[in-house]
Each structure stands twice: as structure tokens, then as C-alpha cells.
Image (cartoon, rainbow, N blue to C red; front, side, top):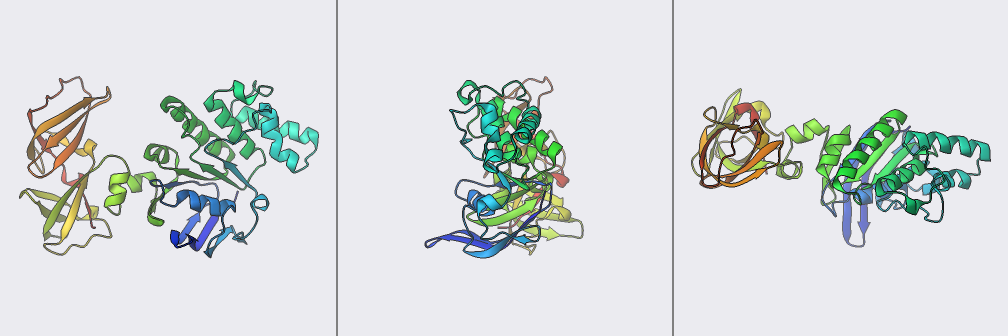
Length: 356
């Protein structure tokens, strides 16, 4: 396994700059995810690492080896595509063995490697089946096995779960992470699905319009987003515009447009936010961190929407100038009703402050 390093990489298609001055280091054995909306540049970046695109400027390294203009077949990468790209006329074993045959390995060695990887991906009894006899999840595992059997230095996955239904996505997500952990291969994963990224990754790179907005662990990205885009893109979030009133050594107090005062901890301010008095700032709070009843940062609103999922109840609560999303874990209590007033509070440590 190898590390991957991108140094001042840009990529342009005509007059359109798809990737802008990207610097990135991925550790050997890391499960690293590119996350962002469609068109943000994540697949373009993956294709440059694979060698399908060359950077317009900048360099790409696998450990110390400069692979910027190296052909894809010389990079020792395994790749799983969104559509799997399996050969329908071949059996499972023939599909898995394809890359080994191209490398002209001895037949006995191919058989040993194919049998081993088939067991790892839990397709032990499916070797002689045709591809069209498999479910979507099984086909995805064949594609993964074909990428892994060549023992790549880097494994690249481009939205491999997008064609699966919700339950199968969850099961296959677990399998991919299990296999990656077992083999220890450096893995780069592309997705626009925040849940996938949070559940699978060691670290995540959030992208927008060809630029990196934040790199961090799932916990860092979720709990300490650097700006409004990251806060709103990663999971559910409430973002409230306010102006700074006071800043002390430990606390920060802001006032919303309707005159509501909110007090939070200075340690929960994004490094990109400015703390000048009267400066506009954005208060971010996750729905699950808002509590019923009186307490810190107390407020009263009117319920405008109720949704019950079994695990939790989701409410939209209308204040004067903004609406809060609130998630309360199911404890067996009766649901609140639309039109009902509700008192909420937000502990000061649960507020996070963002700049523009």
C-alpha cells in the first residue's frame, strides 16, 4: 500500500477550471473519501489519480514516485466503477481473473488468488455463475474482487453503491469497509452521499466548485464545520443569521434578527469566522442537539410539521424570523401536534459559530 500526494494540482477543460490548486496527502492504508455535490470535481480528481486525466498543472505522487503522466496500466491501481463494468458473457471467476490473465500470471497462481479473494468478498460458491444470475449487490462484490485480486497499491471507488437500493447499500457499505480493513489497502472513495462518507471514512475531503472546503475526520467535519456550505451539506443543520454582541475569554453572545440572544462557547467558533462587534455571524446547531423544556438559550415556537420515523420524531418549529429543525429520540411519549406551541432550549456548548 502507498500514500497519495497531490501538489498544486489544477485541471481545466477548455475555459472551465474543474480543479483549482488542490494540495492533498492521503496516508498509506487510509480510507479517504471525496465528498461533494454533483459537478464539484471529485470524480475528475479521482480520474487524475487513476491516470485517465492528466493535470493541467501540478504533480501527483504515489509515495515518492511521480506518476503525473504515467499510464493507468502502470500505476498498479484497482478501480470499481459506478456501473461495475463486468463482462456478462463470463462467469464470476472469469471476471475476477481478467486482470491477472492480462498480466500473464501462471494458471495455478491465478486460481489460488481468485479463490482467496472470492472468499474474502463472500462469494465462495458463486465462481461458476454468470453475471446475469447475480443480484446487484453480488455484482458489486465481483467488481470489488476483480479490483482487489491484482493486489493494487491504491483502490479507487467511484460511487459504487449508487445503483443499489437503500437496504443493499447499507449492507454493501459494511462489506466494503470490512474488506478494506482486512486487506489494509489505501482506498479513495467518491460519493455525494453524506451517510456513506461518515460511516466508512477515516478522513473526508468536502469539495465545492473544484475547491477543497474542509478535510478532516467524520467527527471533525460534522461537529466543527469550517463554513456554512460544509455545515449544511453534512447532515441536517440549522443555520441562523445573527450579529455579535459580546466576546469574552470563554463566551460569545449574539443577537438574531428578531432580537433573540444566544450565548455559546468561544471554543466553538470556526477559524474562518471574524469576531468583531456587530459582525454578521451564523449560528449552527444540529437538530439532535436541541432539547425540550426550559434551559440555556430558551425559546418558544410553533410546530409547523411533524414526522415520526420510529427511532425519532422530527419537528419543524417556526420562530419569528427562522424555522428550526428539531429531532427528539423516541422515548414513548405522545407526539406533539401541528399548531402546538413548544418550549426549546439549546445548551451553550451545542452552538457552533460560522463566518461567511
